[in-house]
Length: 255
Image (cartoon, rainbow, N blue to C red; front, top):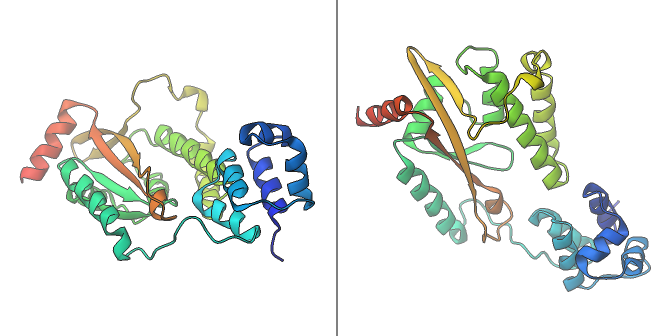
């Protein structure tokens, strides 16, 4: 059974933990109108649907679903990954990752699958036994001693996962990853109070033979991309947290 616009609006308002009055104030409409829209006593215009989607901070895919439930065409396109329209996006990703060399850089989608990686990231992931998904990789590392501060890194990843799930209004695959990570024995026995979050930078510290590599990341999003999937791509660039790590990657690239 297809959900009505009222169902979609009510669900997202509850996801965002907003009352009808909260949403009315955010969208600059009356609470009575919100009530009528949810009950089906009123139907939204296309402009009102988009206005409410913005007030609820809906992801593009959810805004499209809201429009469809109200009887309107999608506002945001969905292209095939190899579509010519997305060529500038693919080029921007490659340029960003290449220019970040010799330090590792990856591009991931909303479920943390690696879409592209520069040479240093590919070699680092291969050396560590990394697979095509970063959460799967983190869970895999939990059984090894390669990641020195695994508990701290996994805890931060779990916080990030849960934040993304809330932003998306739920995601079955991300929720499954979050559940698996939270249930990991090393996190179950870890003391969250012992994790020092009061730091300017919390790097991931890897052990590669006699090398100790300390890296932290920045994450970039495409702010003006309209395509649903491409707008969710994140470029994660890893930076050395100390001089020894910087020297390792520079020598690694020169070899």
